[in-house]
Image: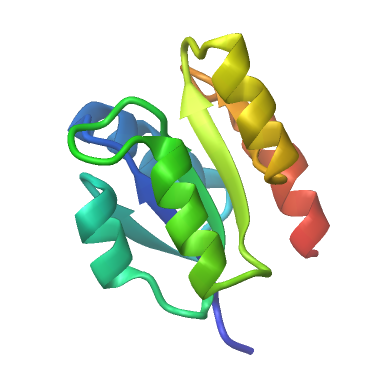
Length: 119
């Protein structure tokens, strides 16, 4: 059986490290693909990626802009914006696109809840 892949996009190496640690300890069967910004994420993403955890505030394109491009390429991709703070207008736009939200800092139980849909 092929390993499931998750894309982690955050300009903070600390934030990526925290998510990596959660996956390593709780979900070691998942393959992690990491990117520091939207451009790098687009260059690394393949159809095998099932889930994307995307920071909202990043240099270049923001998380919603990246999510749009990722979802165009892979309509079955499940995308979650990871953010400490988001304006209501952006929140509504993301929800209308089918994008979920995870509040920073990411809690292990929130990831576990999301991954249940892939079992």
